[in-house]
Length: 322
Image 1 (spheres, rainbow, N blue to C red):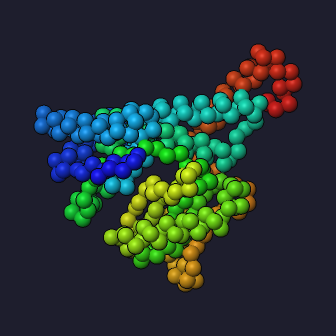
Image 2 (cartoon, rainbow, N blue to C red):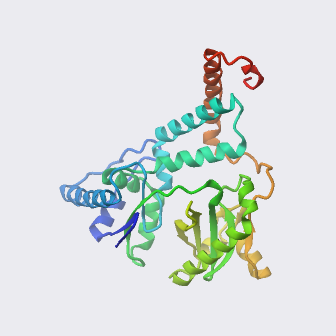
Image 3 (cartoon, rainbow, N blue to C red):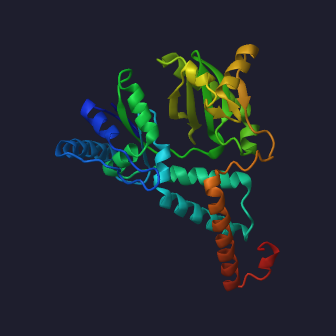
């Protein structure tokens, strides 16, 4: 099946087996103790060629293609492409410091930089890089393993559609009914989102109702975005079982567990809406593993911006640069 900007490639049982058979190190992304047979090499070579064909139909090998198995996106794979993420963050910080004359980024700006960096980390250009990214994803492997007997498996190839940061959301559907809307970047305040919230909530509610009517699962968590042309795009789809909802380690959205999101709407008979109404930080929100990187990179970016100003005869640069 194929539509503009998206292709669904059915996965054969041998292709599924090949995708889940690899084990990778979470630290450096290298394969661990796996012998690739000639048959498996042939299966994957043919599969990679089919992906290349679909990418060519979408306009060729540009760095704007994302892949998934069904709706399981290999977002965790970006962690093994750490160099690319670091390079993206460094460039973003240097640009910020240069444009603001050395003013530290805000809490929200750091979160968005990190999100954009990881998004850049899992874009692909060809079939080989697409398969490698999928194979390195524990998240996708879990999706494949759990869905082997229940669902038809598709390898999804699609163009990356830019989505404004304030227009990404979580939608929680329980018993095929929308009960929670939460902004995706929960630590960020967006004035435009608050200004347009009633129109946005209506658009999201209508989209969720359309999805719920076609779902085979009763409960799910949708990660969606509203594109620049106003369409609601599904970024990720996560089926949720009742066991998952009531476990202590259940998924958390906007500081609340799924259990909390479930109980309040059922008691109040209305949709919970979580949007950040005031520009007050909700803690750092930056993973500990990245906090030291930001400190070091911001110090260097500020120093580079100061040096650039001095070379350009920037005059009173010390008014901003500390």
